[in-house]
Structure formats: C-alpha cells, structure tokens
Length: 416
Image (tube, rainbow, N blue to C red):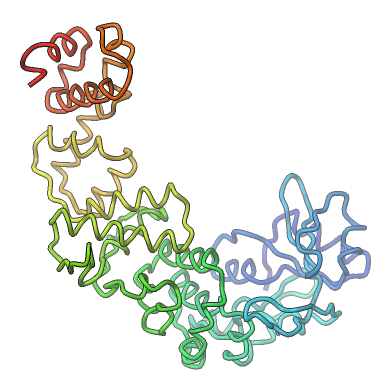
C-alpha cells in the first residue's frame, strides 16, 4: 500500500535512511491518510538519537529533547522527529518518569494509545501494522494497544481521547476499552483542566458532538468539574447547521443548563424565557468554562449565547436592532442558528445590516466631544446621554444624525 507523503516529510525520512537510520511517518497522519482524511500534522519516528537527528539537519528546535523529540524545520514548517522509545513508569498517571531510547520500532509502537494510532509508514517498508490498526479502521473501532487498563493507568487523558476519537471518526469504542474507561475514570483528576478542555472542545467541534454524552455514561463527568457533572446533558441539542466554532458548540451544549439552579439561597426551577433563570443559567455556564480554563473571548461569547438561548423575538425592526446591538455580528448569526429563528427574521437582520443602521455607540452620529461642545461636563453624564441617544436611534435609525439628535435631546421630549 502506497501513501503519498508531503515532500518535506519524504525528504526527512530519506535523509535519515541515507545515513543508516530507520525512519517512518507515524501515528495520526498514517491513520488519517488511510481514512482519506487530510492529516493536520505529520510526525516522524526514527531509530536515530536526538543528537544524530540534529547533526543531519541545518535548522532544528529542541522541542522535547528529554523525551527524544526534535523539531526539524523545512521550508518554514516544523516536523516533529522522535527517537524510538520505551516509556518508563508513569508515577503521576499522566507522564512517564523517564524514557529509554530503543532501536526497535515495534517497542515504540507498543507504548501508544490506540491501535489506529500505532501504525508507521515509509516508502521503503510500506505500512507497519503490528497491532491490528488497519482491521480496526475497517471495523470502525477504537481499541487500545495491548491492555486497555494499563494504557489508561499510564495516562488518564487517554480515556477522554477515546471518546473524542469516537466522535471525530464516527467509530465505536470496543467493549474492553469501554469497561477500562469506566474503571479508570477517577484518574481524570490527575490531568490538567487545560488538557481536559482541549479534548472536550475537539469532541464538541466534531461531526458527532452528541457523543459528549459518553463522558457521562462512562462516569468521567464528575472528574471534569463538579458543575459539569450537574449538567442536564440529556437535553443538549446541536443543530446540524451550527458552525464548528468552539464558542458555538460549547454554547449549544451548556445552554441545556440543569434541572434547577441556586440563586441567593433560593432554588430556581427551569422556566425557559424567565430572565432570572436565563441569568443564572449563563452564570452556571461561565463557571464551567472558567474551571476548564477557556479563554475570555470564548467565555464572553458563550455567556451571550446561553443568556439569549430560547428567546423569541417579535418580527419588528426595533426589537431586532436592539438584540443585534447586544452582541457581535458573528455571535448574532450563531444565535440565529441555535435558536432556529426563521427566514423572515434573518432577512430582516440582513436588511438592517445592508442599510447600515446604527447598532453600536461607535456608529452613533454624536460623540462625547460633541456633547462637551454643548456644555456637558466630562464624566458619567456624557455616557448616560449617549445611551439615551443610542436607544432613540435603535427605535428610529433615520434619526442618527448630529443635527437631529442634539436638538432632540435638549428638547423637552429628549430629556423626558
């Protein structure tokens, strides 16, 4: 079986081979190529030691040299080249205490997580598949290399990766692997929240985000965060046409909330559309995302989407403008998908955009300097007046002119 390698990867493998070293493309790039998918990265494994790799290439970076990994730079792109290794004892349930370099490719493949990730390829040798990876690809199965319990005890993140690969590839987790996940689930506590979040985000942004339910079915959820475990995940809904952006997929999941929320010592029963419930649900979602160390931009967008989830807008331009003014354009577009707003409302929003109606203070025809020129002292009053004017143009966009807004405000009607 022939795999088309990127020229740079082929060049690295050939240069190592010309100097007497074995070298192969390995792992996910082989798996994805066999599945007809475009690999995101091309990793290379070799019998050469790190210092030998560095001696053969002009530009290298010591990415993880203590574990045998050197990044070789070719035409501005980096390719990780790692020496065959055997992992030592995993004392923390996440990382090996030490690694031992080996000249045996099969020993290197044996330490990997899943059979579909334990294949190697070179033009000289073809595919090396010692653990049934090709068969598992054909059977659409996620299965560990060797003992599933041992692989998961070595690195607890692998239990979440199994579910993530299941969602990305539309594969089933085999029975032994599934049972081992349930057994090792408490060890997820040993994994950093950032790494847990990265796997969950990839899962949610896959073709099958609904498989996040397997995180609950296997008993992992309590070891993600306490609030995460309390989500009403059975009611989660992912519209088929929702964008594959992390803030959209997290919002689609977190908007399911939970059966009841606590606020000021009171229990709030689920009342979709109730302002207090929506605020608490948004705050609940934000706590989960902060615990998982997501970035502030994502958290802010998710908060907005969750707070507005389920809101029914009247088909009236002022109401639509007012809603659009509360969020960024891309968030509005995502909200329209998540809420299933009809074509008429979406088209109204597009007309508002095409006309250039004022939807933010930056678009307001009056600014603070204009008000100072009218005798208003700098300070909070400036902001208050601009807010009043902004509300006026949301109702009447044709009034967004300086020569109209300033006389209007200083009239008795504007001050009312």
